[in-house]
Each structure stands twice: as C-alpha cells, then as structure tokens.
Length: 463
Image 1 (spheres, rainbow, N blue to C red):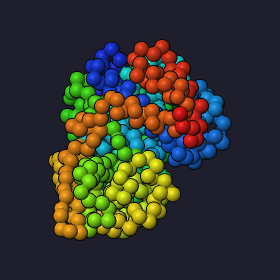
Image 2: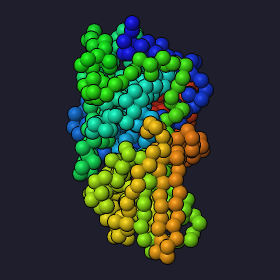
Image 3: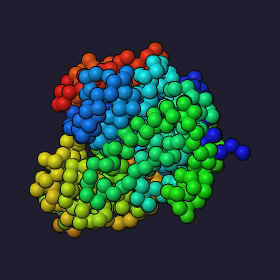
Image 4: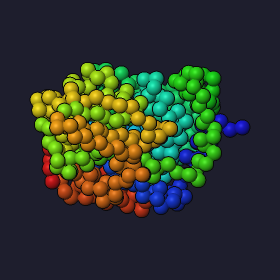
C-alpha cells in the first residue's frame, strides 16, 4: 500500500494545467494575484523590513526577483522575502477548514522556482494548484488541532505545499517528490507564542516554509531520501505534533485530483486575523442604519467560535490595548472599536501610530464575548456582534460565513480592485497593470519576465 507522501507525490508530479477545471485555474490565478498584492502593500508600509535587510547582507546571486530588490537574487532568498512580505500584513488568503494561509507559502515558491528554471506560466499555474491542494489536504486532516496545541498551521503545513510546487517546477518524478516531502517533514515548524507579546515571528512562517521547500527539493534532486511514512508513521508528522489525536490522512486523499479545494480558499477583506472579519462586518452592517453612534454604546458583545476566542479575544487584558501593530491584528476589541469610532477598518488602521488612538482605546474595555459554534469544523470563520445602547436598545447581527469565502464571496472585480489598491502603494500604474495582466493570463504566458516588475517596488509610491 502506498504511503500518503507517495500518493501526494504522484498527484503533484503528474498534474498539468490542462487537467485543471476552469474554476480551479481561475481561482489559482486570482489567489496568486492577491498574494503578490499583499506583499507589495507590506513592502510599501514597511512591514517585514527586517527580512529585506537581512537577506540583502548575503548578496547571494541568482535569477529570481524579490519585492524591492533592484537585482535578482537566489531562488531560496526570493521565496523567503516574498513569502514573509506576503504574510506580513495578515491580509493574505486562508483556507477555512485547514486554517492554513495557503498562498503565501506556495505562490512565492512557485514564482521563485519558475524564474530559476525558465518555466512557462502554465507550469507555474499547475505547480501553484498542486501546492495548494497538498497544503489543504494535510491541514484538513487536523482541522483546528494545530492551533489547539500552540502550532501555526501555515508554518507546519505550508512547507509541504511549497515542496509540491517546487518539485513540480523542477520536474521531479513522483519518487523524488516523495523524498522531498519526507525531508520537508524535518523542517516543518511554527509556534503561536507571538500572541503573548505581538512579536514578529508569524510572518516568517510562510517565507521559511518556502525557502525550506526549495532546499528539500534540491536535496531530493541530488539523491537525498526522506522517510516514506513521514505523515502517518509512529514518529511521523501527525504522531509527533498531534500526539494522542487520530489523524486519518489516507481517506482525505481518496478524491485527490477529482475534487479540488483551491476554489474554497478564502480571501481577506481586512488586514487582520480571519476571526475578526465576521464580527467587524456585522458591526459595519448595523452601523449602516445610522441609528446609533460610538457615544451611544454602553457595551459590545463579540460572538465568536472557540478558536477565534483563543486568537483574538483572550487573554482579555492583552487584547484591550495592543502592544504592537501586528498585535492589533489579533485584537477583536481593537478592530471593533476602530470600526465603531472611525467607520472603517483599513490597512492603515494597523500601524504603530494608529493603535494608540485614545478614542479607539476608550472603547475597547466595553468589549466582552460569548462563545458560538457556527460549524462542527472551523470552516466558516463565522461571528457576530451585539451592541447594547445607553438608552436600552439592542442591536445584534451574526454572519455564519465570513466575507471572502465561498459561501459569502468577494467578486473577481473585488479581488482585482484589492490587488490594485495594494500594489499601487509600491508601484506605478503601468507596472501594476503589467503584473495584473501576467497573473490573469498565467496559463498562456510563455515566461515569467514580467515578475521582474517587483524589483521596481518603492515605499509609499501611490499611482
């Protein structure tokens, strides 16, 4: 019987763009576009600057493009930089059931590897879908369980999707790809401890996964072997990281290649943790009636699932006054208070200057929460809000599905507009258009030459 890594390897090594249903190909191109836009916005706003400075010191030559680097650098360094930048604003996509930020690891890997080997757009598209599907299947097996144990699934799982993408670009056969998965298993990692003090480790996770995946593929291409049962073995991925929890990956792979999860990856309308989105959108909807203002509010009750409570509502003392800009993205009290006071929650809401706004911080102590369960598995990011007004009136709204997911979608126009708004922070209008044209026509692109536009990124360059 074939192991999980062997089955995943056969799927990813054999996948071609011609095999992709139109819905899958279209979703993959839009997610890749969205990911690069998030990376450009992060660069413009100075999020993740440490990665630019540290990689710049190595002067490692190569043929891959990194956001804001004037010269090409090694594929591993480019994947690291673009992976970190793509996740630095926490504005990138998430697959709801696996709770993995899929594209921020997979897309930078596929682009860096694609530039390195001179791949066509069709090859890159197939690699992106292969990577997406591998990440999602591995993460879905343990839906919510990694978070419960203090692990960040994007770092834990993202490396396998990135490995699938890199192996596909480098045209490894199924046997070598399976070895690459086995090697990647010893590189998987990512802790949620940043939640305790707002540290900057979380953006590292997809970038480190992307860089490590390229290393694993390189090792495998030169004959290095990895354990065949890296996932289901007694000392494998699930047994060690989810000790005592059953994880049946075999059944999750039964329809691999016939059912695609890429169209179910959710976009983000806000640059904050996905568990803040439904409550903020619910509050925004209540505010549209214009029958109350911030001064009229006596209390705010956030409605959230258990995982959301752990991420954005507890410990309460830490969430009432975010310590860093990144910390504010994981504070539902801050997000709700900002929406209530300012009437919006934009990218600029999560900066060191904004998080100390006294009007906003005056309202965060009004926020408490009640636990809800919107789905048996964490696949909807549902949430809501109850507003109690000083005159006794109550306004309440719940959204079972967050905006941007398959059950409450953003349109293609919404996503492309999000990309333009993000990219325009770092690039001129003509360069933004070149990138958009490349990604939207990826399946027919003869090469990735226009990815070089990323080198033109500059801070606060608004088109």
